[in-house]
Image (cartoon, rainbow, N blue to C red; front, side, top):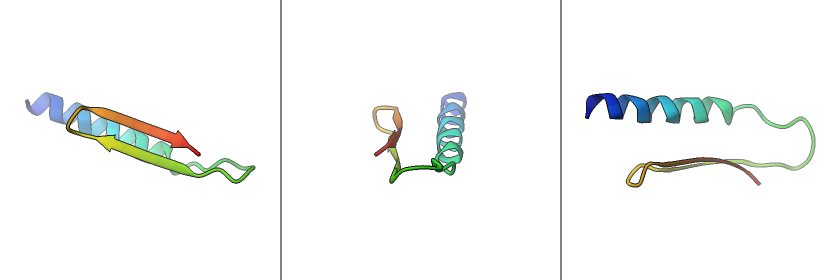
Length: 46
């Protein structure tokens, strides 16, 4: 399972890094959702 755990960490790192970029206009909030139990990873703009 080591390779699968590595892939999970890569995905989380990419999403977390991408979330650092804020939109230049509007009142937009960036939210990250990680459901590691079911392997769901989301980046939401609210």
